[in-house]
Length: 472
Image (cartoon, rainbow, N blue to C red; front, side, top):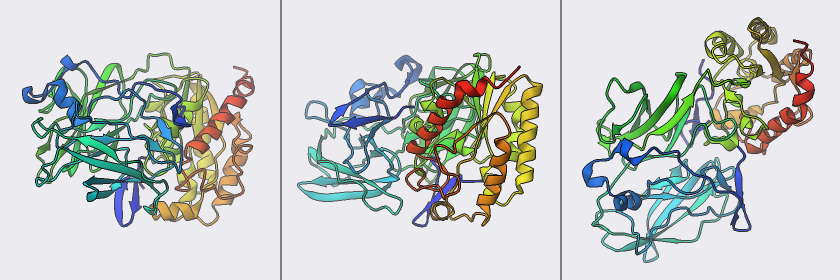
């Protein structure tokens, strides 16, 4: 059974986009970091007609100088990140970008000329939009603004101020997706099962993702068989890789849009580097389901690091979790996914999907016991984490999925067993005998940033006392 890999919003189905997050306070950026770990231009061969810096800049697809983890506080208007001036104009199809708004599920963008709105799009689930000016547009500038929307697509922030975009129709159009996540930079940013995020291309119906073993590579053609590690397909703005990606050498991912007939819409994005090396001497790993994999607020994936508790830990760790896991599937992949990395400590949380679907608690406990035994046989120190509660009403609202009526009793039985083991206890951070508060998990199961911070606090506060309990 596939668990929580898509969401239903107003009758439309989208993939789940299911750290310290940085916030703007008082109009001042508290922190700025590079957005994209892009590769050298020589390794990315854009078609000759599109290779100039002017064309890339006018497309709005170049790396920005701020981190994509930078987040505008809830209820405040989004902060505009892309600017096209008279001296640095846009093409007719620029990518417009803004900071994430904390807790936003979607965004609405409006385009206007002479104070008349000529485009209004509210099905935007990432903080960027590829605008396409109509053929009838002959002006030299337009204006745009954006606001955040909630699950019901109701406004949850004011619109930003109108931003003027100067346009030069003579500049060739460059369309390519814009990657928005960076691997291997900061705590908790190495995933065994990566999730790739990007700003979509207007006109694309699907997306083709390539995983490569080397560069250079042409932007306007598929990679050669010798360079290709894997290929995937998505209908949205992210892709949850079903295959683990392991290599002692750098790998690269890239994406391009395809139209309804399968023809390319523009070119591939710049390749993005990632490394998942079992020989990198990982001391600590995390293992579990989507709560551990990361993501939350429906539209944010495990690669939105502010939605991963591992990003708030005092130490780095490798994320071996996989969205959709049951306790049974976590156990089944232990040998293949954990043993190659052989961490000293393994933090484990799994069973939520099993219990809410009606699995007997004794079966979940049996799976956890076997995981512990496998750890001990491999001289890996197992550290369990107690299960946080869920909210069945919010799960149904977000995913249209039922929950076992006696879920509290089921969770309580498993948590009672966990507390007989060496464990991290979340009970002091999140009340277990109540439904999970909406302000901690909009969808009723995947803790949002505030919830992930509580998980990290529990680990950070209990870590030294927990590891002292091992006598081997």
